[in-house]
Amino acid sequence: MLPDALAQFIGQKGWGKIASAQPLGGGCINDSRVLATSSGPHLFLKQNRAIPVDMFAREADGLRELGSAPGAPRVPQVYLHAPSFLLLEYLTPEPRNPRCWEIFGQQMAALHLHTHPQFGFDADNYIGSTPQPNPRYADGFAFFAEQRLQFQAELAHRSRLLSSSDLQRVEKLCQRLPELIPPQPASLLHGDLWSGNIHLGPGGLACLIDPAVYYGWAEADLAMANLFGSLPSEFYAAYESVRPLTAGYRERFDLYNLYHLLNHLNLFGPGYLPQVQGILSQYA
Image 1 (cartoon, rainbow, N blue to C red):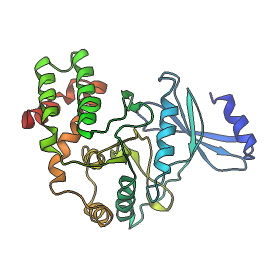
Image 2: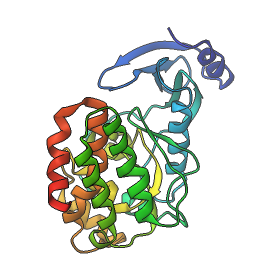
Image 3: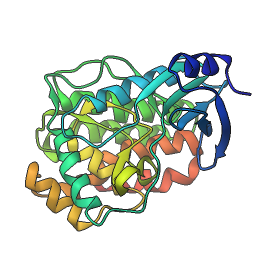
């Protein structure tokens, strides 16, 4: 059932009525539909009555923040949200532009050049369905240690998915972060940059969807993009033409992805434990 507020909003915009609602597959959490209006644009609707009441509001905040960064990848415009739904611009899929990855590399570099004096974000949000705390920190090492690695590790330990000895190894790794990762500014991040959140939209160009936004280390976004796949070489060449990367960045990907693997351990269970333990064995 479509929320009553949608028809009222669409009418107020002068878009007529909802002509059709086509379900879309592929979502891990939400029910998603493309709405056709009788005299306006197509719209994208996400619905879920079983999520935290602020989840869609926090996603809307993240999309707006990404959209505020000059030169960054396109994101869908936020039209309307409530605790049980989020209404967005529909970014019509088109075949990949031959320059897609080059342009996306330049745009992601522009996004990461958008910085803040402190790490974190204006509000806590979610990474998948897991809470993602974003208190402001001046120290990026402390932020990543306490609000990323230790937060997820403690969740897993309380759920008996991570042993006490592995929790201690996470804490030991956190103490080593300043020697393993170079200092970096607090860049605006998508936060959950796996391939499923890179959408080929209008013009066959890459757009960003489903963010878990915060200000953090830019290398962490690139690491996540390589956790379940990889970005092509033309992406990196274009990225570095705008924002050069520090030598050895690929060797640090496992350190950043430990956060996401711990989150997957919490979300999906012990199948991710061997990858978590493998990274811990390298560094702790």
